[in-house]
Length: 401
Image (tube, rainbow, N blue to C red):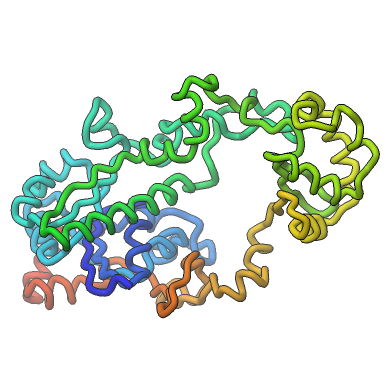
């Protein structure tokens, strides 16, 4: 779908590389620029066979499929010069380097656009390129909590009555980074489309903090409108239902409308207690949540999770299962859609990888294994830039490539 789109990636770890991976798996030519010691994600576990190595990091292997890769010290004058050469002909630069750092190396964003006015630069920074935080450094943990979602995680419920005493938590591993990377990919393609139509490139100044506020728009908007106070774990909690334990697992119930409740009552076989006055309306049920949960728990502990979900879906009950990783992998749904596909890496071996969550009519998404460190140095610096073998050896000896 994106054949012909040339992209240079100067980014590490999660968000920038994942954004580039999404484009690469769609056919874009992604040239990943790594420092001579490699992307920091190469040292991020877990590792294949639990053996650390620059080509054995499972997160790196996933984040960098379908790319070419070279090593280059862009902070060195000669390295910065080579980067400018590599950008010639590229339509998009994805970078998470601080703007001041790039300017100090002689590859400032403004200078790049002066020489390549149609270039699109996607600049991923913790807090954006303006404001008092513009030069702050941050890890994914920092930017996630800076956006406010951690303050209201985890949500209080009858399963965790003392959750308000716990410290703020972030979502699982790097969920925030993946979320903002998909957002960044959409912005990058929109800007490339605009540049192709007008010949005018631009800088996309993407603040990770602001992008991750999107995780809790539901809480921000009522507060901005003056309707509700600042959200807390307790205010986000559901009065009844929510996470419920079955005989063989857990499910989630939500009740936003009367017919949601009516379908649950039907699923339970219309018990007599559901006809009581205290359970008749949504308002009365909110006041008697604990009493309702006592009945729900008693009924649920005799039910199979799969039976509840299957039968509930048939009658419009808003119920969904909590699946473990192995259950997701083994499901017929994943098999039919071929979401997991084998990828062979020369060092890490052959393993199944998660692929694309979408399908096109005439395109199959089949990722290619992530590149080993410096795999494409000879092709890119030799064939593409015309450097001789002696020049390349000298650059390697001086730690430039």
